[in-house]
Amino acid sequence: MSLVWSDARTHKIVSHLKERYATENGVDRFRSITGLPISTYFSAIKLRWLISNVPEVERAVKEKRALFGTIDTWVMWVRYLAVMLPCNALCPSSYGAQ
Image (cartoon, rainbow, N blue to C red; front, top):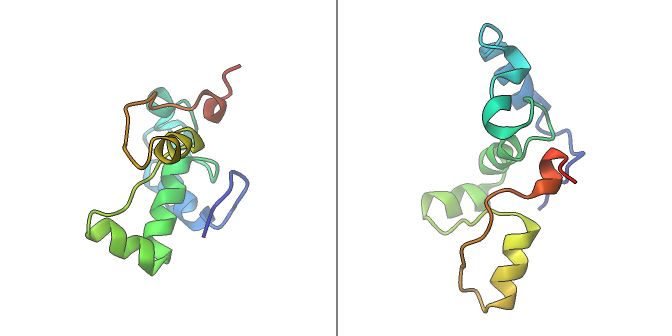
Protein backbone atom coordinates (compact mmCIF):
# COMPACT_ATOMS: atom_id res chain seq x y z
CA MET A 1 0.00 0.00 0.00
CA SER A 2 1.36 3.38 -0.91
CA LEU A 3 0.10 6.90 -1.33
CA VAL A 4 1.93 9.10 -3.80
CA TRP A 5 2.02 12.90 -3.73
CA SER A 6 -0.88 13.23 -6.17
CA ASP A 7 -3.14 10.68 -4.41
CA ALA A 8 -6.47 12.28 -3.48
CA ARG A 9 -7.92 9.55 -1.25
CA THR A 10 -7.26 11.90 1.65
CA HIS A 11 -9.73 14.53 0.41
CA LYS A 12 -12.25 13.82 3.20
CA ILE A 13 -9.61 14.43 5.87
CA VAL A 14 -8.55 17.62 4.09
CA SER A 15 -12.16 18.83 3.94
CA HIS A 16 -12.61 18.09 7.64
CA LEU A 17 -9.42 19.98 8.58
CA LYS A 18 -10.29 22.97 6.39
CA GLU A 19 -13.68 23.16 8.08
CA ARG A 20 -12.23 22.65 11.56
CA TYR A 21 -9.63 25.40 11.11
CA ALA A 22 -11.75 27.79 9.03
CA THR A 23 -11.51 30.47 11.74
CA GLU A 24 -7.78 29.88 12.29
CA ASN A 25 -6.32 30.75 8.86
CA GLY A 26 -8.09 27.84 7.14
CA VAL A 27 -5.83 26.03 4.68
CA ASP A 28 -2.84 28.04 5.94
CA ARG A 29 -3.28 26.96 9.57
CA PHE A 30 -0.06 24.90 9.61
CA ARG A 31 1.92 26.65 6.86
CA SER A 32 4.22 28.45 9.31
CA ILE A 33 5.18 25.08 10.83
CA THR A 34 5.23 22.82 7.79
CA GLY A 35 5.68 25.15 4.84
CA LEU A 36 2.58 23.63 3.26
CA PRO A 37 -1.12 24.42 3.22
CA ILE A 38 -3.67 21.82 4.31
CA SER A 39 -4.02 19.76 1.14
CA THR A 40 -3.99 16.19 -0.14
CA TYR A 41 -0.25 16.71 -0.80
CA PHE A 42 0.56 17.04 2.92
CA SER A 43 2.29 13.82 4.08
CA ALA A 44 0.92 13.93 7.65
CA ILE A 45 -2.60 13.72 6.20
CA LYS A 46 -1.55 10.70 4.15
CA LEU A 47 -0.22 9.05 7.31
CA ARG A 48 -3.53 9.72 9.08
CA TRP A 49 -5.37 8.14 6.12
CA LEU A 50 -3.14 5.05 6.19
CA ILE A 51 -3.63 4.58 9.93
CA SER A 52 -7.40 4.94 9.59
CA ASN A 53 -7.87 2.84 6.44
CA VAL A 54 -5.27 0.08 6.45
CA PRO A 55 -5.76 -2.38 9.32
CA GLU A 56 -2.15 -3.62 9.17
CA VAL A 57 -0.85 -0.06 9.55
CA GLU A 58 -3.26 0.69 12.41
CA ARG A 59 -2.15 -2.49 14.17
CA ALA A 60 1.54 -1.71 13.65
CA VAL A 61 1.05 1.78 15.11
CA LYS A 62 -0.78 0.40 18.15
CA GLU A 63 1.99 -2.18 18.64
CA LYS A 64 4.67 0.51 18.17
CA ARG A 65 6.11 -1.34 15.14
CA ALA A 66 5.28 1.29 12.52
CA LEU A 67 8.01 3.39 10.97
CA PHE A 68 7.32 6.36 8.72
CA GLY A 69 9.81 8.42 6.78
CA THR A 70 11.00 9.76 3.49
CA ILE A 71 12.72 7.80 0.76
CA ASP A 72 15.96 9.17 2.22
CA THR A 73 15.31 7.46 5.55
CA TRP A 74 14.31 4.21 3.85
CA VAL A 75 17.55 4.14 1.81
CA MET A 76 19.55 4.71 4.97
CA TRP A 77 17.59 1.95 6.74
CA VAL A 78 18.34 -0.53 3.97
CA ARG A 79 21.94 0.61 3.46
CA TYR A 80 22.84 0.32 7.11
CA LEU A 81 21.12 -3.01 7.77
CA ALA A 82 18.01 -1.72 9.48
CA VAL A 83 19.92 0.43 11.97
CA MET A 84 18.10 3.74 12.22
CA LEU A 85 20.49 6.66 11.96
CA PRO A 86 19.77 10.34 12.52
CA CYS A 87 19.03 12.30 9.39
CA ASN A 88 17.53 15.57 8.26
CA ALA A 89 13.87 15.65 9.31
CA LEU A 90 12.80 17.47 6.16
CA CYS A 91 13.08 16.40 2.57
CA PRO A 92 13.66 19.71 0.73
CA SER A 93 11.78 18.54 -2.36
CA SER A 94 8.60 18.19 -0.29
CA TYR A 95 8.32 21.92 0.21
CA GLY A 96 9.72 23.18 -3.06
CA ALA A 97 13.30 23.99 -2.07
CA GLN A 98 15.81 23.84 -4.85
